[in-house]
Image 1 (cartoon, rainbow, N blue to C red):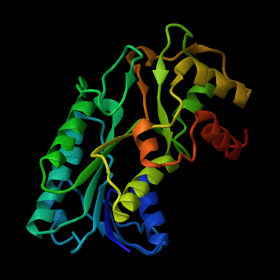
Image 2 (cartoon, one colour):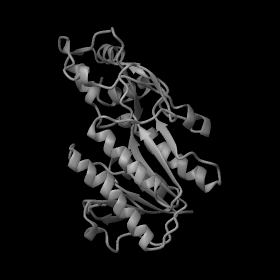
Image 3 (cartoon, helix red, strand yellow):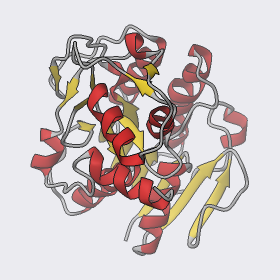
Image 4 (cartoon, rainbow, N blue to C red):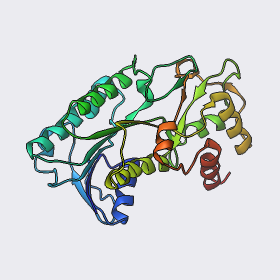
Length: 285
């Protein structure tokens, strides 16, 4: 069994902490609030953007550290504080303690890829973000790469799942996207985000070789037109069609999950219809 610190214990980090603790690992979960995370998990209350709150909070003899935070504000300053400086703070404290974790795992985003031409993207595609979110994510990744620790970054695409119903709400409200030109979207169910992170830890524990970078996305890139129309048909009673206001500002790319599949991960939800059908059923549709 391993000693694991989850930095950022919200929907994904908290779910990962619960799953690991249930399997017998010793787990600490760090979050800004003091709200308990779950059975068998030691909750650490600290703010990664404020070094003073972190002093004395990092457990000793850690085997794995997972950095899975969410910035409390969508701004360049917020992303800089929580993704870049927060990670730097954690790495500095690990170094100060002479810690030797087997692997540090960073949860990033496919926003580092700015493609708008519908092209296929994989881990060999050069990341050249143009928006602040992608730039700050990439900067954080580079800080981890510059550390002395074995590390893996996972870039997740659009996350959906229980409580993450933005597209469902858009479909209910009659949001419409023209069928042409194609506007490609990519997504991953919350449970597969947790699954991939746990898979990486388990592979490392088993001595399996790991890459330093994986794209976390399901097996079915889908046009925005297709998914909105499927959701509207599945829901049934929706508002009259109107254009999706932010459609022209979206990325337009198809993400490949070939590398994580070849590593041996099996998706719980390979296609958006599997995940959304389950969510809609739970919502009473």
